[in-house]
Image (cartoon, rainbow, N blue to C red; front, side):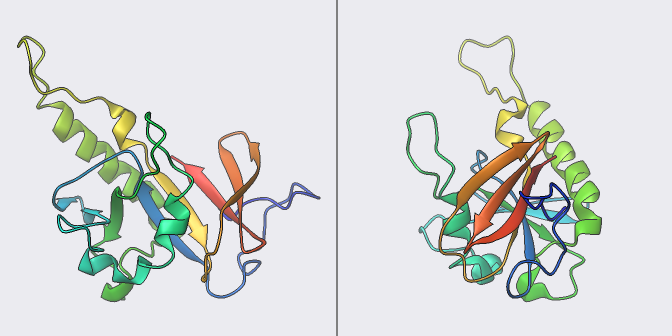
Length: 175
């Protein structure tokens, strides 16, 4: 999914964005204190406990803060950390976060399993127990080309939203 051209409402060609388009999968509302591996994928916190970019996500150090800048929590604070998906079968381990479009269904399945494993830990009949729902596990995919200087929403079509990065359209889609 690479978005839609606003003037024609037709899909954007894969090479429309300048540079080499990349695809990152992330859960902006999920805060992890460590990495979790599920079904061939790792869900990794963007920032480690010291506030530094996790080493396996070093290639996202400059681009991802701009991508994440449009996400705010309920107290209207910008999100600075979230869970990012890494493909354990990636051919380039330095960019294992750069997902293949063909693997998005597998990522979706792995994220569902991650949610189910945390959901199983819910404590329903205790006064102050552990509880989780699927809101934090919303999975997003973002196409982008570097450098990423800003984010600007253009419009929404069904479940897809077009986003401009440096004047080029890239698609954002939630699964």
